[in-house]
Length: 228
Ligand code: IPE
Ligand code: IPE
Ligand code: MG
Image (cartoon, rainbow, N blue to C red; front, side, top):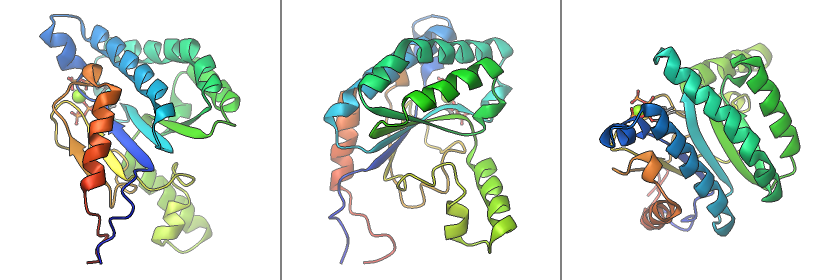
């Protein structure tokens, strides 16, 4: 029989896309779109306390985003700095456990220091917010396969133990905003059986209501995992 008893998403992943188009439509600089995108993140993370989700993974910066103009990359990094400064206390107070996935140690050393401090301060949180920073799924899988091969046979299980997300449940639901219908090198392994929802909303306009709607849609999906 089909298994639709698991209609509660434990792990939701979001590709937060469309900041640039949001700004362009308003004839604003792209940086303003990114700034409003951060505000959407803040509101969404606040709303998690009323939702049964255990883990939310947010794609903030891909390993391919270095291809963007240097100005934009530094705007994004500065937003990261100011977000940690302004929101870390609230994360701690709200029981958020921050996790970073990706090659984040290659970022500027002051950001690495801030993130290390943030990880330490949030480590007892009960609800995980994972931020994908300098993240690429193909790179992650190659890294995990190398690590698995050095100590064991390569199997799905041994690879999985070396992924950044080894301590998280698989992704149940992926949401991508802005109308693009692609995965852009995000959590390819972890999404093997994820349900996917693509919405037209641009990321800065995404609200907790949109997440509730996606969870309602998810609850009606029938997941089969290859069975019947
Ligand atoms: C998503 O918005 C933010 C990042 C990729 C960092 P974009 O900047 O990709 O916005 P669009 O896709 O150009 O509208
Ligand atoms: C994916 O969005 C990365 C993030 C949201 C951080 P992009 O805007 O970089 O993806 P592509 O280039 O349209 O595939
Ligand atoms: Mg984009």
